[in-house]
Length: 416
Image (cartoon, rainbow, N blue to C red; front, top):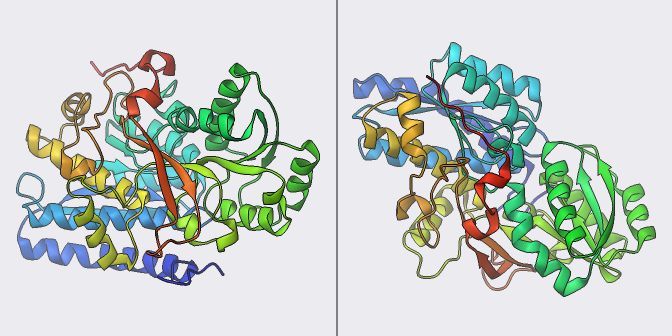
């Protein structure tokens, strides 16, 4: 069982979070009735069970907090907002089924999700067909805002290309050009590896890789293959519980003494779940709780701490920013019409109280990707604060990390 020494973030937290999410759905209609208004419903599909559950629960926690704040300020056009959460169980078919249920039976006005990139792509096919505005909170694979982009889909988290572009040169300069990839065998993993390989090849580097099924408990065979290749860097693309397991075994086998480790995401949920010895390597963060001088970050972090007992994570921010963006644009445009709202979101800059980062990141018109800062840095054991386990060395502006929109392959076609 994965647990934190401080804050108790593990399987128990996931189960408690999922139970609380279910209970909130039962309670919400009674609260709404008391307010005397028909609620505006937001559907959220995320893998509350499975290897990505830690990240999913954090996203939902952020969205629930964001929903409560929206309702304190009058909701959307004077109507309360009700968040309906469904578990995709890390399965594409289940994610599609839950998305259709939310749209067809529950009559939601908006959809958010999924952490799993493959599920997010499949959900987007449904939301596009049904003409529902859809924010992908935490699914990173490039095609979502690339070749598979649609008029109704916007993304809060970075594309895999943004993360790879932000850190590749650091890994090459610090450690070398011979890499081995430990890659999850689904859309996100394939996308990250392809982005890294393109950059590595351009720099004259070489690589080999292992494709690993999601939910793999034993990484011995893959780590033996990596050791035999003798790389300078092990690029660990695994996510959630898979990343936790693989990094634990990486250190147990002493490979941290033979090669560097790093990659794109080593999220705070995962850093909390590994021992100090596995809190190593150079990675990207897509939001960080310690940003001195940046407006509203400290307040958001303090509010999430009251809810979760720990510092806010990027996933908390993804969920919060997703629901807050929907409410803000609907109140601005005074409509729930998906086409009108999507046109208004194209080029929309997040206000500081939602952005919670330097600058004013906007949804790029050419592909609907949020041009969010990429925080490049180094993981380490706690320094003072129990969640101070990552030092940001190089914040990369989203526009610089993303490259031109034309290069993504996105061609947005709007409804007549």
